[in-house]
Length: 483
Image (cartoon, rainbow, N blue to C red; front, side, top):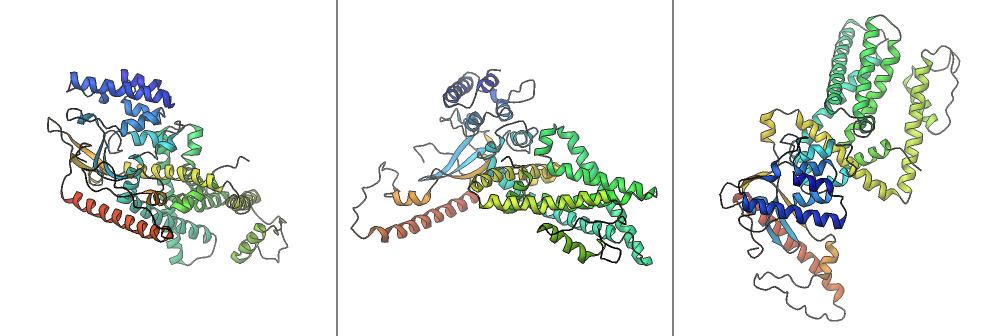
């Protein structure tokens, strides 16, 4: 329909966006006046997309931002608004955002379209727009971080069992040790089968192309490869083939590498993990210790890290190809990548890399949150749903919506704002602040810290009071005059 057509012709330029927004709002208000029962924005096109979902899918960030932040004054037009100011005090305000079509609680939501839409060029910027940014943070704090911690502990136990099974596989063991080893093999096999099926179903559900798979499914691809190698190793082991050892070692190495996946649960570790993932554009005699010795292996790997390793091998080593692959991978990971990351940290471009990595880390965390939310049963999803239900008023009295409360500030630099603020006007009848008294020479430096502390204390107390009141009573949206 016409709203979809307006979304299609939008191009994110200021002039075009201003025209599209005016036309879009004009159509909405006229339809609301002529046909009050018609919900124009809920009409879907043949791709089952409403206008706001189409704007998200095509990357029209400016139009999408306006749709989510739309405020239309007037009692009859209240239902057209998606943002409602609960309270405002100076540059600080508390707003309610309508989560209809935005929250992943519903099917094919805007949040899911952006997070899983690897073809959207500016989806990193779109996730920073409120209320999507606040919505993801609330989901993480409400339930996702606990599930993520549980999965991390389970995977850490899985890797520990995997390591023990691989280490004691060819050693002489007692009867009790053999029973434990067999139990560890069973856990390892079924765990690998679970990882294989989970990643296979996830790839089938998303149907990603190669580029999106390398960007969004980087670790998922490694998990799939790890599980596949482990299953092949077990099949060869049951067939009595000695080649199973090579597949087992490669799978074990990938299992330890996949621990980096859980770094996305931590902000500082997550951004450096992203730096590692991103590509940069700019044998001895028979009586000598072997790599079967743990101390000798650790020492030799340290020598390779500092460039003093010895690549002489004897013919007694089996599967030398696997040994070379693991050794070269270790050198690349520990020496080349870590050294380049250290150089990047000391270079002038580290700030830009950090900001970009922060956005990518937030995207990866968003994917993790939605993946965990998807597998929750419906009763838990309903209980853990983000936001609150509020009656936003209206002539019909049926304007109840599920909203998310977001505290916002129009001031980016509070330090400069405190120095430039003349007087806090608390009288609603006064439109202009009282004139600021002239400063006495020598008092400027003594006044600024005191005023800054007073302003911060006042702002903190006001936030606490509003938050306390909001928990006990419903606050209806106010008009500008009432505010």
